[in-house]
Image 1 (cartoon, rainbow, N blue to C red):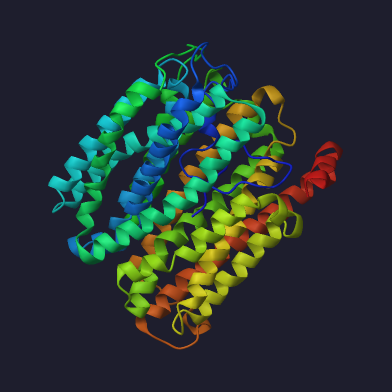
Image 2: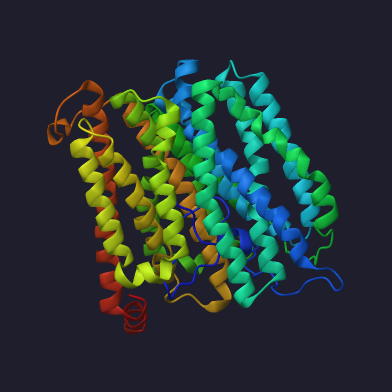
Length: 498
């Protein structure tokens, strides 16, 4: 339930996780940072900020709302948890890839034109989903088309402010985006919860249609100029990343082993592409940079848990305690409020609680939720709230560790690929959690207080997530401990940031 800060202050350790509008959104795919502080002469760039920020928040509301709609959608269409998760996992991968694509296109196509395209895709996808809401296949197509538009609107705010502002003003506008993510996530959860309870989950496809009301403001306030500085998008590289992520997600649906064929083939092709193409998505030297590759492994492990817990939460509360979705959505308020507060006071918080301490505390509370899930919803609510703090404080210091030995000229694309990995890991986490929910394991049922069929397997899944998070923290300490001992320059920087 966290969103990566667009250009985090790495010294302060601030900046909670995203999904969609990440630093990748602010850096073209060729690795050249967008020119900041260069507004078009005679045009006030601040005029467009309220419109773009509104679109940013609105699209995040829609995206988060659909993630929270998984439980009522599954019940209405008689779907398993792993099947219904596809509308969150496949679209999650698309959001991550879309952030890179649209950020690069924004250097050769006017942002106003990209917004028109975005709105068109959102409307078409929403209509498809609503009209075909009786068929999950049609719903999935609608969600994919809709998300292709949501990815643009979520990304272009960040692209715009990094192009037109700098210094304190840039930090202010990027701070708006970070806090807006928490606000939008809360609104999306509440809206979808109340619609699912009192109207129908299908109405979530009608909400996005309201975005057409923004057209006059886009036309009059968003400039139509472009600097034409992009050298293009690595479509082939992004396609291979999409194939790898989608293959892993589909494998987790029912453990059909042939899905590993496209995964392995795409991985081999991606490695070859990176080694032989100077304009590939990521530089081959990145994979010989030990701090960077270590950080990629760690974020892939740990951030798969973040969205997985958000996906699990409504199913667990509804299944174990029988709460209606409107009440379940209200239980998310403490988490999002705490997440927004952490974003606003991240510097002060990080001085008292470093990232590893925060995630360790979140891990302990997650284990506590596994113990008391049958007894009270309070343990789940507290665990969810602490996830906002723990993962929020982890993001920027871990990125700082990744960039320890990265040349400044390559830091832009390094940040972009780093966040693409997060956006791929998050839906994969949802996929393996949904797979566990469908199989209903009870391996660790004895570790929970009380007993019920639903509580036994939900507590088992919570303990599984605890294990994944613990593995990530152990890997962090081992890998960066080795780097610190073997590289004096990295050791000095690690000591400074921690």
